[in-house]
Image (cartoon, rainbow, N blue to C red; front, side, top):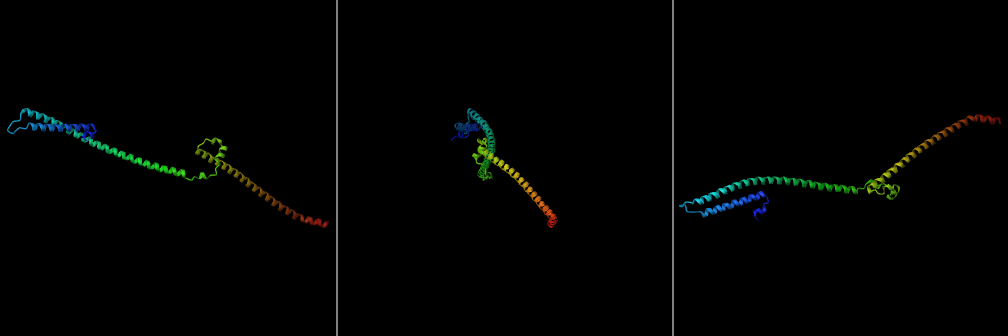
Amino acid sequence: MAPGAIVQDSFLQSVLTASTDARQKCMDLVDLAERSAIPASQTVPSETKVQLSQQLRQLNADLGDLRESSRESTFEVRATKQNTAEARQEIDRLHLQLQNLYYEERHLRGEISACESYDHQYQKLPLVAVDEFLQLQPEHSHDDEKSLMFARINHELAEREALEQQRQELLKRKQGLIADNKKRKDDLASLDKDLETFIDAAKPIQKLFEKQY
């Protein structure tokens, strides 16, 4: 596979092109030198010297550009590596954050499942049956299950509070009756004592009458 097919960056492709051109010029210069080779005893024609000199200057210029491009590409590669490392760190951080979110989601799902399966105390309350409750309070006939349960619990609470109020009132009446009965018993006991006193006081009079008649 040709290097140009692997490298997709436009700048690096230009560097590869410049490198290929410089290599070709080196090969052309070597070929020209070989074709122009003459014995040491002979003088190189001036035309050949000029041609070799021109190609050599062009080659040096191209090599200078190539070195400059190589330095720039080196800097770009370093910058790319740095950017890649930073991007990898960011990806790792996001991946860790995603994993934490998965763990948190799993935990919350477990908590939700535990709450749904929990044996709540309100489920044991002797609530009025749904049909009977809806007959008593038809305005809740379109409520969802949760709202309906709250309404039934509040209804049960109101009923128990009313019964508790009645119980307290009956208790007060009972205590009042107990106190009234106690007072009557005390009054009767006092009356019995007064009667005994009266009877004891009347005994001498009764004996007097018995003697006379």
